[in-house]
Image 1 (cartoon, helix red, strand yellow):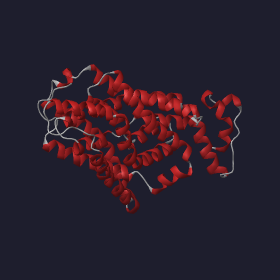
Image 2: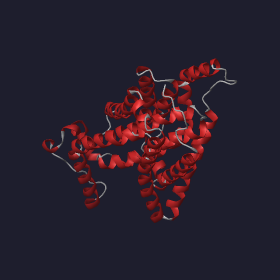
Image 3: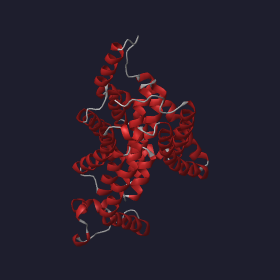
Image 4: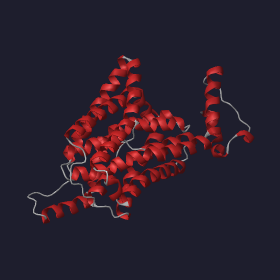
Length: 347
């Protein structure tokens, strides 16, 4: 277990981090509209597949990594918590650059953010209770008056408080789209600032932490996102959704909303567990920027042809009417669209 002799973040850092998280979540809300939720209900197949990937595959992957790497209980719970997180607006941005279905990505983000209020506590209780029992036994053995249990009520309250600014951002978009766009752009910038801020604060106070951190923590943080991308893509392909949706589901599965993990840990856990748990989401949030960029570059290359056909279809409908269906000769259809040939006529 990593020994941290002082709090990873002092009171001032925590207050500043809380403000930045609120800005991020407000900007996330400014990117959403009620139509995003109605779209999720009207075309549920992609969102259901995304839900199963987000709250089915990712927590299992996180649990498997925690057991395989034999992570200490606090870090194991933190990794599972990251696996239970909803997606964030960062995944929407990467879906755009990866030539994925941005509409599906946004719908998945909206749905998973609301469902996290229910799913996160349930999944943590299901997958992290064994690690919580180990912490409880260790605390009692050391003479603590009370043991440890996963603070489900605190987690729900934390999630609710984090989601409040999302609602505020949606209200802003309803009445002032221009300012909402500014808030949305600020949120994307602030997400990078949060990672740099956390890394800088840790480097100043705990510079040696980067060296003494065992390789298993780095491996867990990096592998979680990579496994999420791979299994999300494979699961979507198994359900035979078209390639643009496969790429969106893959990115939405692997890119978790790290700021929510920071908020939940800060609001729900006490020292020294708070500092021991916080380090892993920081490592994950840092590494996922790199891994998602590499995956996006790959998707952007492999999805060029089918995305071009999608855009052509959209232009044709605008020119010739919604009932127009483009007929493509088999020779021009890219390999990853062969089995979706008929769907091209309905796209």
